[in-house]
Each structure stands twice: as structure tokens, then as C-alpha cells.
Length: 193
Ligand code: ADP
Ligand code: MG
Image 1 (cartoon, rainbow, N blue to C red):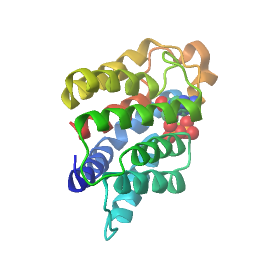
Image 2 (cartoon, rainbow, N blue to C red):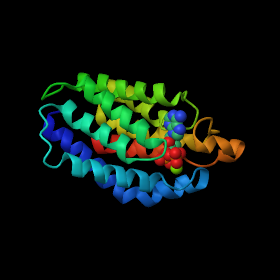
Image 3 (spheres, rainbow, N blue to C red):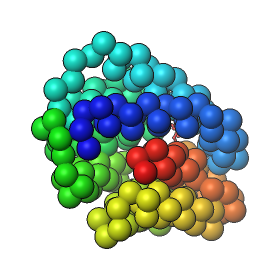
């Protein structure tokens, strides 16, 4: 991935998040407070604006700027979580051109940042349940497999009981609904593919 491709990834995320904002909001209305689509739409619109005219010399510059903007513009749990993930990925990719393997390491660092900040374990019905299988699949088979694994992981959250975030307040009643954050993580990996 080079700097232009990093920009293209972020732009693709902004586009898909905008297209899917209503779906994300509907999912968050069922087990949260209904703002996930709006949060990400506003956040990635701000990222798109921040990257325009921003001079990036490395892939990391693009991703760090993305993370910092998400942290400052998105209220709600997902802003700091995704923001930290992109900042961690940015830190790991301080060159103009990165290999598939380096990107795999960076995605892993992104996952570690989400887990450190949010404290969620696999199976807690959060974005971790899509991000974790996606990183594993990326390492073994590349970006397309990662996108498929993220989507599968997101779907599999339906049967889980939430143990982190707002949805955990619902206890048993969170079962039967797909997690909004895991769903948006699938969009991020689809955009990467
Ligand atoms: P909020 O819950 O503050 O309204 P959002 O609606 O934007 O924030 O994001 C909700 C999503 O954030 C959830 O669907 C879940 O995937 C994710 N999430 C919430 N808390 C955590 C956590 N502690 N660790 C990982 N992900 C979390
Ligand atoms: Mg919400």
C-alpha cells in the first residue's frame, strides 16, 4: 500500500459508511442509542475534509490523521475506539510504501488498541468480534478473505449476549441483534479489499 492507496482506502470507508449509515443506525436503535450511523458518517466526512490538502509523506501520516480526526469529531464509544485503532496503525506504518505483511502487523496493532481501550474480549458482542477474525484471515489469505471474515464475524454477533458497551445494559435482550460496531468494522475491511 502506498500513500495514494491509503487515501483511497479512507475515502472508500467514508463512501460506504455514508451509504450504510441508515443500516448502522437501525442496528444501534435495537440495542443501543441509535447514533452509530450518524457518528461514523459525521466522523468520516470530517476525515475526508481533513485529508484534503493535507500533505502526507507516509501511509502512517494518512492513518494517523484519520485516527486523530475520529477521536476529536466522534462522540460515542466508536470514535475513540476506531480513532485509537487508526492512530496505532499509523504509528506502525511510517514509510511511503508498505508491504502486505507490514499492513497485517498494523491491523493487529489496531485491534490491540481497540482491546486495550475498550477492554472487550472476543465473544463480548463488539467490533472486536469482526476485527479479530479479519486480521487472522488477512494474515493467512489477504484482504478479500479479511473482508469475508469480518462480515461473518459481524453476523455471528447476532447470537451473542453483549458484555461491553451500551448493549450490555440489555443483558439477555441483546441476543438476536447484530452488533452495529462489528457491522461497521466489516465495512472498513470491505473498503480495504
Ligand atoms: P455509543 O455506544 O457510545 O452510542 P456507537 O453507537 O457509535 O457508540 O458505537 C457502538 C459500538 O461500539 C458497539 O456496537 C460496539 O461494537 C462498540 N463498542 C462499544 N463498547 C465497546 C468496547 N468496550 N470495546 C469494543 N467495542 C465497543
Ligand atoms: Mg450508539
